[in-house]
Amino acid sequence: MMRDGYVVTWQGQEYDAVPDRDQVRIYATAPAEGFSEVKPGRYVRVLNADEYDEIAYVRTVCTWRGEPFIVLAEADTWLRLEYTGGRAPVARQLGLEEFDYGVYQGWAPAGEIRDRSEHRV
Image (tube, rainbow, N blue to C red):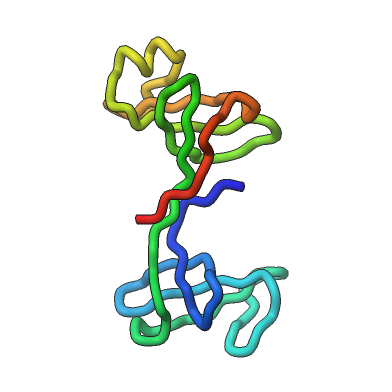
C-alpha cells in the first residue's frame, strides 16, 4: 500500500483528508452518518478544526539499492520513486530521470524495494 497525503483522526478512526482553511474534508468509502456521497463509493464530511483529534501528513518511504526514496505511485509490480538522498551523482548512477532541477525520479520493481513504511509529519 502507498499513501501520500493528509489524514485526520476523528472519533477514533483515521480518514483521508483535505485541509481547506479552517475546515477539513474527510473521506470514507462507505456511507456513514453525516457523510454525503460525492460519487459511487466515495463519501465526504466537512469538519471544523475543533471537531477532530489530529491531522498529519502521511508519506510512504523506502530504500532502493541502499538509497532513500519516497514512493509516489504504484503500477502493477512497479513503483514510481523520488530520490531523497540529495546527491545528483548517485541519482544519475541509479538511472533516475531529473524530473525537475535537483529532483530525481524513476520506476523500480516492487520486489527490489526495502524498508517500505509510512512516515508521519
